[in-house]
Length: 67
Image (cartoon, rainbow, N blue to C red; front, side):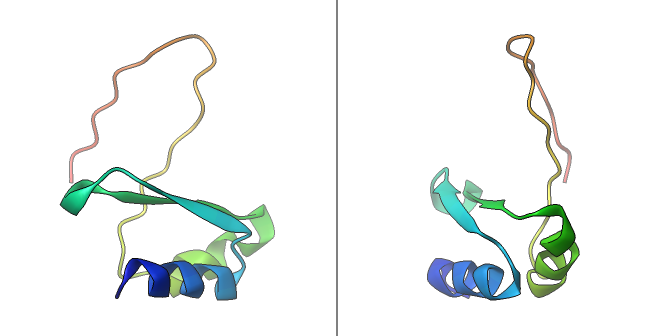
């Protein structure tokens, strides 16, 4: 799927909006989805990897996510 098609699929499933981050094969789509719509969006984009995250308020933090 193209980025536009993935974004449209996420919006149709309940995402409010999103942002493309990164570049090349290492890019991400960051989506804003209300809690009650998150499972619907996950199902709609089930062919993609979902990487959970949380905001860190105490400064920088090194994270490593093994695929």
